[in-house]
Image (tube, rainbow, N blue to C red; front, side, top):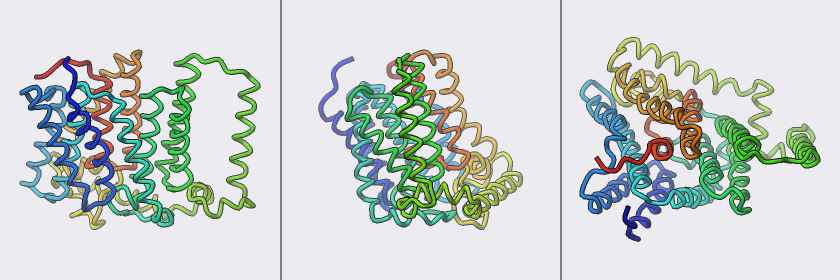
Length: 377
């Protein structure tokens, strides 16, 4: 494979950074689609063909189905949001398969993460309000920001040099911010999963030897730290949102948010049963449910909006990647992609990834890690 031109690496880096920076605000988030189209056009000029479309054919079929759903209902803004996310995911996938180093993608996401943390600083106090509906974009939406930052930490650890102190410090900082300052339950779940995976990677996959004394020291430090954070007499527990959220869950004071989501899932199921095959069209749940927003569950969101046909078309790509990833799970990159798919499967019980750019970029990364290189069409 010939070496890439400098412009392609730079445009890919800018695509990654601005996809997440522009996604910080709802009004600007759609501008990133033009960067994706521009980057795909650069690849087209380089190869003269539409690159690797056969490995991305399932999402493209769903994109077409999503567009045609406007004929039987739905909302054009919702449909455009979903289509934009799919195209951006394809641009990332094609760029990586074409030969752009994955380190450019990871460090682009790190830069975007730092910028989003800086932009969201003034909104940190807002995150403790646990509304069922939060604004679109990363800023102001605790769940979206927490999911993005957590996956940046995951990719930084598993797709770069783990031994570098800088990498470990950035991973720790990102997970620390997610836990202590977003107050997102999904963020707390992801932090726990990533810490567990890092432990498995270190102990099993790397087969590292750990002295019992070091384990005891780490365990004692962890116990003391958690005890300090969660005690009723702790000073910081009054101000740290992650601690507040966990304490609220333990006291049963955070039921309103969960109850609202249960009602949404129930209403989405009822809407699906009324139109089981094609659904109500893109954005149909928000229009017809009375809630005026998405359902906070990707599975019922798909069923109510696109019916059983759309549901199968959407998750066919997941199943495809899952099957290949499982067969190649002994290979390191395939294992990373496989883990991304598993985490998305779990998250989507309480998160709508359908039109989320972060999720589609993650799918593009997972596809790159899992699917062997087979050239252009």
